[in-house]
Length: 406
Ligand code: SAM
Ligand code: TMP
Ligand code: ZN
Image (cartoon, rainbow, N blue to C red; front, side, top):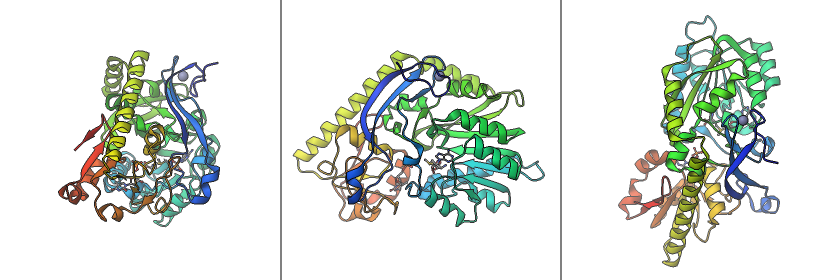
């Protein structure tokens, strides 16, 4: 029996197996080592609706809980991105007498802080306790709960319809999509918009950024698959916008069917996806082969550097890096430690491979000869502040779109 599509119940054809993987954001203490959770990370495409998705689900409470360690405000570029995004969303409901903005996955309040500062009614849904508390410290109104059909109906009952429902890097995390879209249908005002942005599968294939594949990233969206996904819920994809953040994303704008005319950008992107062959098995198999080549090249480079006695330090204890390190068997023998600015990750061990995570300051103390840039999506921001590394003779190792040292 093939796996079943979480959107349409169609048959999912697997095209990439990334093996046994841990929870990507489970940074461990020594005591945790005995009870690590593993699952099989593999990706397939639905032969009916073209949705690309994981074939195995990880229970949501194992990923999103009190100690979830990802804080959105850790990047200055992302802080700016979400401030600009919040202003754009506020402008879109400025004509409403008492607008109401809802965010799904509001994390530490990186977006809703701007909404709150504008004095606009808002509500964040954020099940992960400590990041939700960080938002509340900024006066942001948060429900420490998962968004789904039930919690959305309760919000509609308490607060009335939402003019804007926004989500960033969250909708692709949610396998129970029918409950989400039912919730959007219950909560959204008749002329409201549901806007979400997530890593774009077109960019993932074009750049071979296979490390976007991990437990939390369940769906890999295209304009075509999103259009089909929302259509079953009386909703319509009315705009798409490509974004440079996180290695390439698309922002999808959804409205009630017939409420707003779709922009030309929607048909243009769907046509570009057809030309790229994004849902065709030969393209997907080529992506899998490119992925295998990059992983083999990276493993060979790190082994050679170890033989030469060259130290390699990881930069950014990203969730993405779990896929790379666990597939390649990159442990502390190959990468001596990973530096990261997030206090919740520091002093812990990376999932599955048990590399120590140290504060960012450890990077320059002293600079290593090589740094493996796991947070490649933040390359501009990181290179700008770590100029001293290159000046000291250090070299960056990157693996997107292929393995290169610079
Ligand atoms: N929006 C932020 C950003 O773009 O940086 C946070 C993204 S973070 C990768 C995903 C967030 O979604 C986590 O904080 C997680 O707790 C939250 N989340 C997961 N499932 C959710 C659900 N059903 N409803 C609301 N939030 C959810
Ligand atoms: P992300 O790629 O999922 O946003 O994760 C980025 C990780 O990298 C997160 O743990 C924070 C860390 N980081 C740094 O250590 N230094 C930095 O300058 C930036 C931007 C991120
Ligand atoms: Zn399907």
